[in-house]
Length: 247
Image (tube, rainbow, N blue to C red):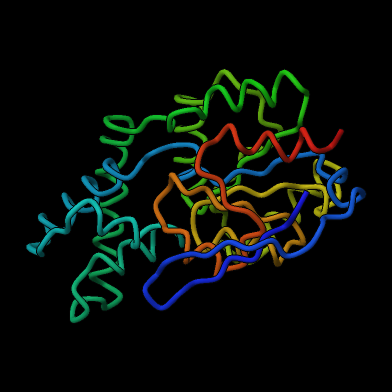
């Protein structure tokens, strides 16, 4: 089995070349999986975009196309709101008011378009069948994180579901990921961490976890590679190969 070097050409084309053999003991260490939520397990983009755009309209500001929100999300709701506002209107009072309105709108819209990505249910079911411990870590507010997981992924057993919490730094800080590993009593090095953005890849590396970039999510391959992805996967089922290799 090879690990690969991802080379990014100036034109954006990715060249993949074998780098070196992975040691067998490195392969065998994977015992648990930690997932990001938005853009990884659930496609939440339309509901997030609609909620934030509704808040912007109430404040008299221009809205954004849904695709733009792929680059607004990922670092917490406060950062989302600030990025969505015009640069000249990012004062504390305006951000606070827009944040309040966005939360209120999302309470109304969070389940309108949100769905698991294709293949997610099958992948989670297979992990559950194999008794692989699973957890979720999101920068989405904790209330919304638990709400969406209960609604759309309630059939699967996650040992921990955790969103943004007061006093704990958001990803890419590794604090929450390391805390999850400690709570599950599994060393961070034995976790596969799956996410769709640079925030996730950075958090995984900082926590000492194996970083897997989900190409079906919000961000593109070059961002994931530059942020330290150990592997990129195009379909959820490909994640199982890491655990098949456990032998």
